Length: 254
Image 1 (tube, rainbow, N blue to C red):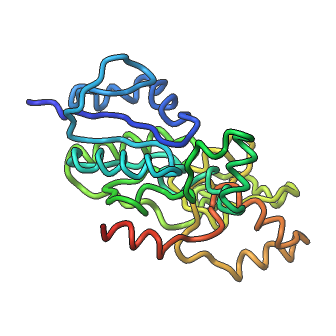
Image 2: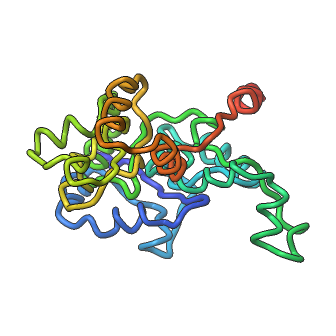
Image 3: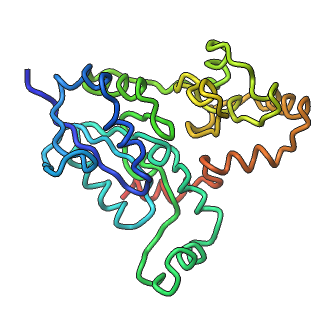
């Protein structure tokens, strides 16, 4: 059987999701006999522009990024966005809190005029995305599931219920019971409550559920006497503060 050619690409990101995949070990054996990795900067020097599936990490933050992701999309039969930066804008989205010129000068100082920048956007605001793997970094079992779905041509729907559901199934003690603020009640599941399982909080890296239980969340905050702005500040880490829908609609029409 002919192997599917898969290429990995990165945009504005820390490349942690690529490292996660590079270190996935035995899980990768489930798909290695079906794919031919033709480009993956973190693990190989060879690269090919002939690929069927593009797996893309990182957010779009420059005009060059826009041009490059469109070129990748034009070549790929399937495009998979993986990691928070690619799927929801990620930590890079915090840039959108400030005027772009202020951010550019803060980072590049006197050389700021040489560096173009645009508001941070996830991939699906610029090109069509076929599959998404949320998380920072990606949860490897989910990544393998999505890759298998892409290779088989079947859909994968990101869970649209809260991380709290998985926490309950894993019999975790609620972080709020420990006196710690957590974004699990409003964050999309699919990670098997990975962070909480290991003693950390949910930071909301998978993005918000589409219909969060606002009353339930407010009840939790009132019960544990937690100010609303604490939650808003935590959400700002991954969930970019302003949607750029008008601009994105214009871009997609071009």
